[in-house]
Structure formats: structure tokens, C-alpha cells
Length: 352
Image (cartoon, rainbow, N blue to C red; front, side, top):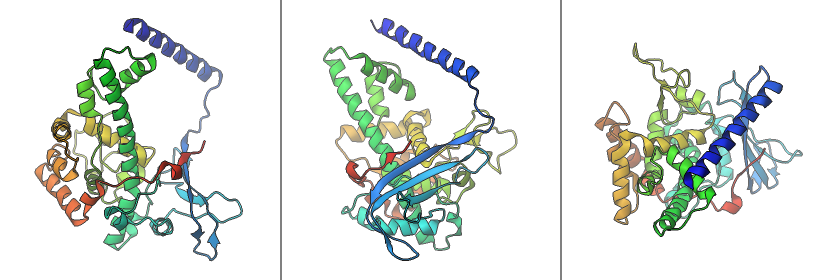
């Protein structure tokens, strides 16, 4: 039965491919390639503009647009969706910081456990992060920008994990799973490099990355959002790639080496790739095993414990882990492991 189902899926996929080829031949794309628009919006309270009176409550929109020849950090702005009011420019770190304040986004309040994190998902970091002379301010802007993205990806993983656990329990009872669930499991297994039907290994891999650990690595790998890779390729975790011409070439790459730093269309894509890397690459089997052990013991996943398994993430090994530990301690990131996004009713939604 399963074999017949898979053959049907392959035939359907083949038909789609043929159809797409026919469309491409009949209607070829324009010679000018453009970067897809990424627009997110969410309701906000009254805002006070720098030029004077308050702007009525409305929707803040974050978008990333531009041509392929432009930097991926171009075209990031925030605006109130009301044609009668002036847009709030957010090309600079200063403007972004002011917007955070207007929204009441308080990192100390989040750490104390009394405030939730707004669903503000930036497509790219401001290009002038390095121009901020106050280290404390630069760190605060960086953490506020990246935190919602990490929480969003973890929520996505939790949703997949809940569904996976449910399907695993039903399969153990001998229930026949619907075709849509079987197809979902096939895709999930391929994405996480697991054999089909291996629920135990999937549950080991489909799990979150502690927020404090992800923030510390993002800060370390991106130079607090100032590195060329984060500015030009939204690469805040320094992931390598060997896939042809993809990614950015490191300026000090040793002779004979071919690796590049993987580039992304958005910061959210970078966070998703980072989580999947830790959840699939053989170099992080220790990380996944410790996480699974903590789960079985009923303990809360804490970044400070799990970063000890990341000696393979950098050529610096143990010294790299020591650096992450220091970042977590100095910035009190442990308190953010319990951070949560604001309720869905105030969530951002894509605009097509």
C-alpha cells in the first residue's frame, strides 16, 4: 500500500515538473532577476514621530526588497500602513532602537519574566551597527533584533515536534496513518536525514535550540551584527557551504580551501538553517544526545549546559565554548531561555 502511495506521489511530482518546464519555455523570465519581497506586518499602539505629533495606532510593516545586484541588507524599513501619515524610516540602528522603545520592547522586562517579546521579525540588520560607539547599546539592539527570530523558529520546531509525537504514538498503536500524515513524515525524515519510519531518531532531532545558546552564538559569529557576512548575506551564524558559487568568500581564506560562508535572503532563514544544522550534522551528535537525556530526565533545556557540546562548531574548540560561556554570563542570557513571543492575536502576518 505504501509503495503504491509513493509511486502516486512521484508521478504527481513528475507531472508538476513537466508543467513548470512548459510554462518556463512558453513564458521565459525577464533577464533582470529580483529578490523576492518579504513583508511582515503587525498592529501597534500609538506611535510618536520624531518630527512631532503622535501617529495613530496602525500596522507596522517590515520589508526587504531590491534587485540581485543590491546588498541583501538594502531596502529594510518600517512604516505605518496609513497613507495619510509619514513612514518611520528604519534603515539605521538608531531609528530601530527608537522603534523598539515606542513599542515598549524592554529586554530587562523579558529577562525578569514579566514581559513577552513582540513578534517583530527583521529581514536584515541595520547596516550601520558598527557605527554605534556604545557597546552596551549595540548589544541591546542586536539581542532585541535576533531574539524574536530565535523564538519564532523554536515555536515552529515545537509545532512539528507535537505532531511528530502524536503520529508516533498512533503508529505504535497500529493505527493506519492518513496519506497526508505519511507524506509529511517522509518530508520531515528527508529534511532531518533520518530513515523513514525511525520515529525515535526523528524525535531526537526535531527539537529546539535553547534561546541563550543561539543568542550567544549569533553574537560571536556575527560580531554583534557588524561582520561582512551578516551585513551582506544575513549570515549571523557563520555557516560554511561547499555548494559551488553559493555564499560569500572569506577574505582570509587559506590557499587551496573552497569553502564559503552561506548567505541567506533573510535573518529568519539564517536562524532556521542554524537550527537544522545542529539537528542534523554528525558533528553535533553530542549536542542532540545530551538534549535527549535532559528531556528523558524531565529537565528544562538550558543553553549553559548544551554549549559544552559545541567544540566542533569552531576551529577554536574549547576556547570557542569558553567565549560563548562568557557572553552568556556577562549579558545574563540564561534568563532568556524562558522568553516567549507575544500572543498570536498580535502576531505579524505576511503580505503578498
